[in-house]
Length: 272
Image 1 (cartoon, one colour):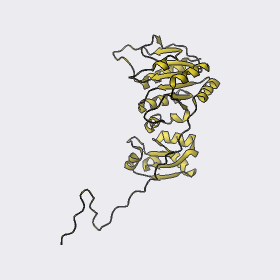
Image 2: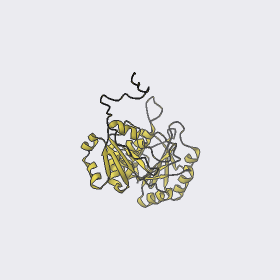
Image 3: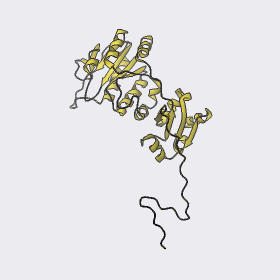
Image 4: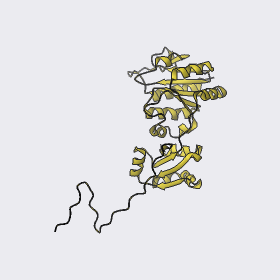
């Protein structure tokens, strides 16, 4: 009698009948749990809100490189090692940099609280009008943190109601240093900011006023729009001034993250 053939699509057992041990199963993701991946992004969460962290999954290389991850063990945070393949599966990204951190969702600030903070600090916030690309969002948030910007305000976020893991990773920890607020009616929220004596400036490539040499006043917000759709009329109507970055080359416009970085640098240099 011939031995039964293995089912099609099912791996043949190794000789001796033993199978390799299965990797440790990751606990099911809690709906009230937020994933952060990327080494610098995870270290920033560890430094700024360690009590929110529930567990860490790291590669052996990342653990060896970042001694600061040992702080997690000292704090009693669950930490286990995993392969790069498993980390890619957990994060949905090849850019996990050897770290997946699971924590309570970050707290969002109400727009009115952001307005109060800006007035009290004579601060600055960057505003996103339909900017959806997570790489652009992350790059702008990193720049904002670099220049000491106080917060970020988002119009309706799609398709997710919060920041994506990719945006947080690209920000390289900058997200943890900003007050984050969101609104479903950005035009109305900006109008209320102006009523609270916050200056509202918008980036517009077709504006006649140059951002170079412009005298910004504080507290202030800088509004950046979608590269294709631009700024919505309701948002544009709230601007105290629309500003352009003058160029001399053949390309008509800049990537929004590049434009935002230039404008934030100019705001930091010239605001009073």
